[in-house]
Structure formats: structure tokens, C-alpha cells
Image (cartoon, rainbow, N blue to C red; front, top):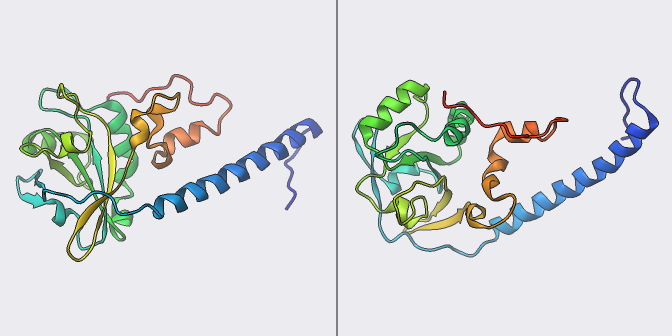
Length: 215
């Protein structure tokens, strides 16, 4: 349906219509990529049912994190045992997810893991107001290393993974591998899930050099 807005010029409308064509093409490509993702062959079997610890210290297996669903997403928070503070970019990402958890968990499992103790994560949860976010300690497991959320020197990396469970197996389904690609968009590996950057992309200023603050 042709649209227009008050007092716009012919030049604006012409350029906007061309942009709309590009936006529609991008939408179509996004749908195509999503369909290809859903059609991936089975990923690697999980060889170890990792046991994490909740912020209360309770032991929880990877199987448990599915919460009865067939799909689980795990985000690796950059907050290692020696870190003075959680990564501000990770924190901004998780702030955006805080209010979506109940809606998400109605359909799938969702968890945040970090290579830090349950006690440190409990303090972080309290300080950030993340009581609704399911935070788990990966200390004592090889999960972070196995799934590329920790490099050989122990540095933490912000990976997102999706796992799929059947009656008798758990397999890796998808990971945010764009993070490791040498491209201009390398830091944008999870932007599709991050409302802030998508909103900035709609503005005249764009993203600029904005960085979320530590608080």
C-alpha cells in the first residue's frame, strides 16, 4: 500500500520507496537464512552432561536446563573468576533479555553461564537486578572451553549456543560462529537478538561509537 507522511518532499518519498525495496529484500533474505538454519543436519552429540551450579549452589545438569522443552539456548557471559566486573556489552545484552525470560521459557529453555563461582554470580544477580535471569556457574566443567566461550589463555568470549534434545540424545544445533569471522560485522554475531543496536540502526546517527556503560 503506498504511504506518505505530512510535508515530505518528492525526493524523500522517492528515496524512501527505494529503501523500502531494499528492506523487503533484506527481510526475504533473513527468512531464507532462518529456513536454512532450521534445515541444518543434526549437530554434534553432547559427550558430557555438564553439571553447572545455580546462584543458590544447587547442581543442575545440561539436561535440566531444557526445563522439559526440546530446545535450549545458552549465553556465555564474560565474567571470569578474576574479572572485577561483568562485561558491559554482555550486561547490556542481558538487561534487554531480563523482561523476556518468562515469555521465552514458555517455549524453550534459556540459561546464562559464566566461568565464575555461584557466590560471585549471586552477588552480580543482586547488583544488576537480574533475579529473573537464570545464571549458572560453569566452574569445574569444560563447557566454556568446549563451546569456544573461553580461549586457550582463559579469556572469556560471548558465545550463544542452541542445543536440541530428543528422547535419548542432546546435540548442538547452532552457535554464533560469526564472532570468529574476520569481517567488519564480527562483533555483531548476536545483533538479531539485541534491540538496542537494531533501534540505533533506524536513526540518522546510526550506531556511532556508542558503548554501554558499566552500570
